[in-house]
Length: 72
Image (tube, rainbow, N blue to C red; front, side, top):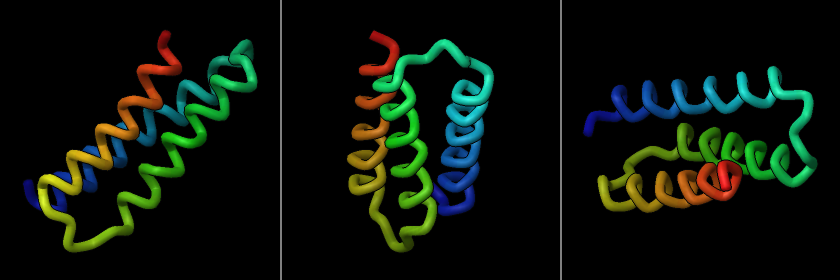
C-alpha cells in the first residue's frame, strides 16, 4: 500500500475517533482514555516512515484492539 493511501486511511480514522470524542459527552473516563490512546497511536503511526506492510498491519491491529475494547 502506498504511503499516501496509508496517510489518508490514518487521517480518516483519526477524524472519526475525534468526532466520537467530541460528540459523546456521556462517555466514561475509560472509554475516553481508550479512544485517546487510539488517536495517539494513529498520530505516531502517521509520522513513521519506511514501514513494511506487515509492520503497518501490526500497528493497525493494536489500534483496532483498542477500538473493539471501546465498543464492547
